[in-house]
Image (cartoon, rainbow, N blue to C red; front, side):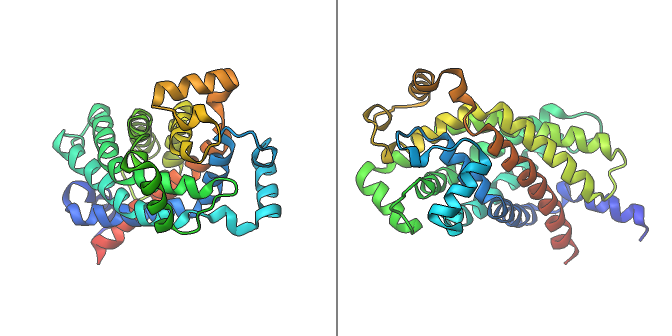
Length: 299
């Protein structure tokens, strides 16, 4: 088989490989992505939380990293990663398999520009995966909090359920969808556009997947940061000592609290670590996904 034929098979795996390949490749990519970038995500959560405690206020990424490491130890930067590992595998499996299925269904694998198909597939994938991932994300952020009492995923889940009910795991789901549907649509559209621009022949090119994935992650993360701040407020409200935050009812109420407390600046809380998290993690996710697709197919 010639090199060109191998390259074509690699990029042509998407419409032909079957659901199982995409699910397994997506699961492995998701676990890899979230595990590697977890400390940056942890810092982002700390910077987004509204707190009156000076010990939990940070002036930047470097300040947060040094203070957390010095006062809580390096292990604190990874607190809650087990929740991500448990949830990210299944969620990313659903995400990538739904993306490929909808993309094929809507003609996205045919020649020419198919950005509408790609964006639709991305949004559909997000609706499905977020329904599965949202409870794990709530647990993760509860464990990431300053002076969190939780050291076990299951202990955290039991406590949240006992004290706040099932609703606590999904109070942020509408906000999550409002944020991640445009994020996913933007991410997939930018990824596919950049990939075609950098690699019009569709040849095997890990560098292309890294650059396209990184750009897609950075753009999507920056655009949706205000919604992410609201999501964090909702997901951590049960740990707050502020009565208004504890009684926050939804996205619009969260927006009002953020505006009242911190004005326009409040909606950019955690912007830098969020972009720095999503740029490399997205690049790694797409690189891992494409690699595992090829590896699984070759086996």
